[in-house]
Structures are given as C-alpha cells and as structure tokens.
Image (tube, rainbow, N blue to C red; front, side, top):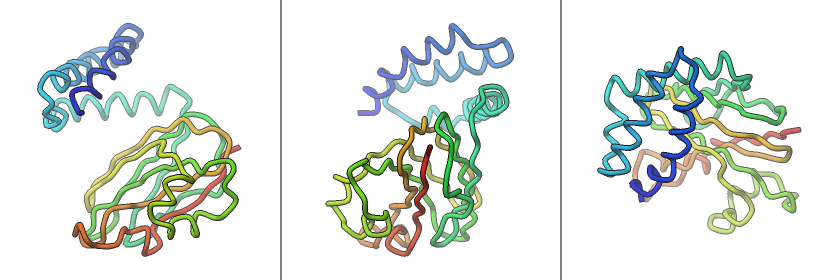
Length: 189
C-alpha cells in the first residue's frame, strides 16, 4: 500500500522538480528521491532522515511565504483544539498542529461534512461507524507531545470539522479523543 501510494505521488513530485524555483530546487529533488526510494522499498523511515525532514521543512516554509496559502495555527491539548476559527476562506490552507499535551499524541483529521448533512458535528461524532457516511477525510496530520506537524488542505466552500481519533491513553480499546470533546467545526466560504 505504501509503495503504491508513493508510486502515485512520483509524477506530482517530478512535476514539482520541473517547476521548482531555484531557492528550493535541491530540497525538492531530495524529497522526490526519498519518495522514489519509498516507492521501491516501502520503508517510510526514509522520511525520518534528518536531511529529508530538514528539506521538507524548508520547502514548507517557502510555500507558506510565497504561494499565498492561508495558515491556521492549532494547539492540540488534552482534549481540545485551540485556534480553529469559525470561518475560513476557500483555498489552500496549512493547518499547523502544535501538540501542547504532556502525554498524549494528537491527530488533526480535517473532514468535509457532506452537503446534505444538517446536524452539527457534535452529534455526528457520537454516531460511530455511521458518521463515516456523513463526512469525507480531506487532510490529516499528527504530532507527539511537544512536537509540531502540518496538513495542507485545499478547502472548498462548505462545512468542515477537525477531530482527533487517537484512542485515549494510546490503547487500542480506548475511546477516541473526539469522544472527550477533541473536535471543532468550521465553515468555509
């Protein structure tokens, strides 16, 4: 599965190599090389190498500064998100997750609520498997305590939610953080 996904991303990466500005060309080349390695080996640890993570960060900073993306700084605490606005404009948006928790990993799953769904996400999140029919995942990231990561999402007009589905205490049988209130809803216009 990982090999297949990496293989599907390669053409996008190769196009990025072709059009990359000189300031980040070397970093983009390195990231595409890492993606190629992943497509052959299936080992995601290639993206944990310090030179690869540094290249990814430099490209992300460049994108934020030069591509007109919106940035939403989000703090994940036990068990809530801080910093999610009630409304956002449509377009590319980088959700920057900073995990401020002392023990728990946190996820920021960005979900598009289907247009025909009228109930609030606070009700949807309680519906278990039925909830999957009412939302569509459009982005995701997670961070360990004290760490940060980001998810870039192309937002289109409509209703959205962010939620954390990691089990409480990291146990497989624990309820998701969302069951403790770690979700927020917002509208994109």
